[in-house]
Length: 322
Ligand code: F6P
Image 1 (tube, rainbow, N blue to C red):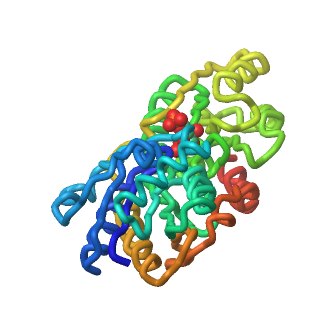
Image 2: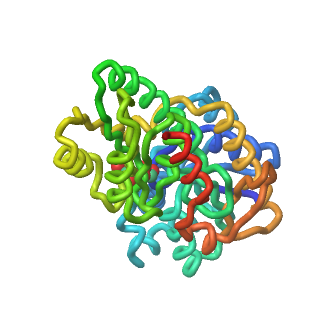
Image 3: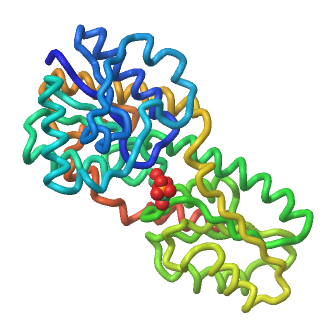
C-alpha cells in the first residue's frame, strides 16, 4: 500500500488529534504517502483533500477537537453523494483509509464499501464509549473527567445551599458517561437509557433516602427516557415541594478540552495499529483496546449498541450513595 487517507467524522472528541498524528507518522515511517480529508465524508464529496507531512501533525497531541474538522454528512447517505466521493478517492489514487469516528462513521464506511473497494480501518472516536470492541473510545476518559470536575464544583454550591441538583450529561443513546462519572462524583442517583423505570426509582429513593443529607446530585443522561433534566426537576419539585431544586446541563464542554494522558496514549496506539492493520490487509474493522491489548472488531459488530451495562456497577453506585 502506497497511499492512504485519514479523516475524522461525526461528533468530535478529545484525543482525535493524537490519533491523526499517530496515523500520519506511522504511514510516513512505512514510506507511504498520506492525505487528509477535512470535514469527514462531506469533504470526501466536496474534494477537500490535502497532503500531509511530519510537520503537519506537529504540536497537536495535546489539543482537543480535530485539526481535520468534522461533520455529519447527510449527502453521504445518498448514492449520488457516495459516487462523488468515490470519484475523488480514485482521482487521488487512494489505496486505503483510516476513519476516526463513531457508529455513524463506521456505518458510512460499510455502505461505501459496497461501491468502492478500498479498505477502511476505523479508530473509535466518540465521547459516548458506545462501541463494541474497545474498553475505552477516544474521548471518553477526558469527557468523564470533565464531568466530574464540573460536578465537584456543583457539589460545592449544592452543599452550601442544601440543594438538589439535576445534572444532565451527554449520551443520546448511551448512559456510559452518566454511569462512570456518576460513580466518580458520588452521585445520589444516575438515570440512563439502558435502565428502565429510572424516574420511579429516583422518587422512591428520595422518599426513603437519608433526610439529613444537605445536598443531592442526580445525573441524567440526555437520552434517558425520563425526558431530560428539566423534566426530572419538574417532577421532583412537584413530589417534594420542600426541596430546592436546580438544573445544570453540561452540554458541549464535555466534547472539548485537552485530552487526558490515557486518552493520548490510547489514541496513539490505535492510530498506529490502524496503519499496521491496513498494511496487513485488514478491511472494514475497528481498532480497539480490550484488557490493554490491541484488537480488531468488524464494523458490523462494533456499531451494535451496548444495551446492557454492568448491573454490579449500578448496584454499587446505589449502595455507596446511601
Ligand atoms: O459525540 C456524541 C454526542 O456527544 C452525543 O452524546 C450527543 O447526543 C451528540 O453527540 C450531540 O452532538 P451534536 O451536537 O454534534 O449533534
